[in-house]
Length: 116
Image (cartoon, rainbow, N blue to C red; front, side, top):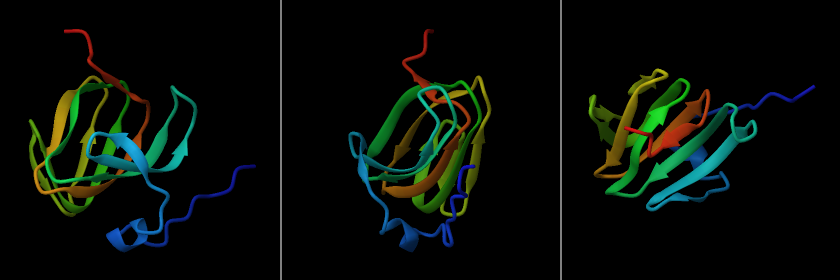
């Protein structure tokens, strides 16, 4: 049986103890779990000021909880404390002008450069 993942504090202070690795230019990731290349995953993402995730399509639900800073997409500006839920079939590009820390949960991996 798998063991539970416990996060006693989701706030930015807890993220300082995680194992960070490069994810995209200007963005680092600390994986909480991954279930293969097509399954669910969860991680913290840390955006440097001006970092962006290119346009992508959601194959499953994506939940993004902004823990610190802010990020923006075509839905608006998402400040600290915002929970953004992107349903399957939606697509967007994300930018963080001032940098941010988010907790993100993917039902399925996103599709970068989706067909038009």
